[in-house]
Length: 123
Image (cartoon, rainbow, N blue to C red; front, side):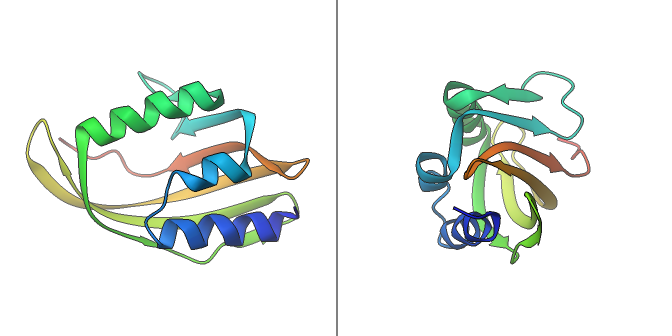
């Protein structure tokens, strides 16, 4: 698949609230996922196992009330997407809206790297 097609499929599934299917169809088994600068616990996840653990942590810690997803911006083997989420941090009960930019790298028809940039929320 070309980068544009991968980007459009990821956005379509995410807009439908399906955040699992992209992992099965669009991601390399050796994907690297980075939160902001990659520092701290959970800052870097590697491979499907790492993504699964990251997803489990997210579900345990956040209730998602609403998500919006922008159309992708594609540049050769890279694309970016803006996510906006209305969430409640389960441990603190703090509800907030946050936005982040996801930047994705595609190689050999699969997403090999994703990195998310956002302001750290106070919990």
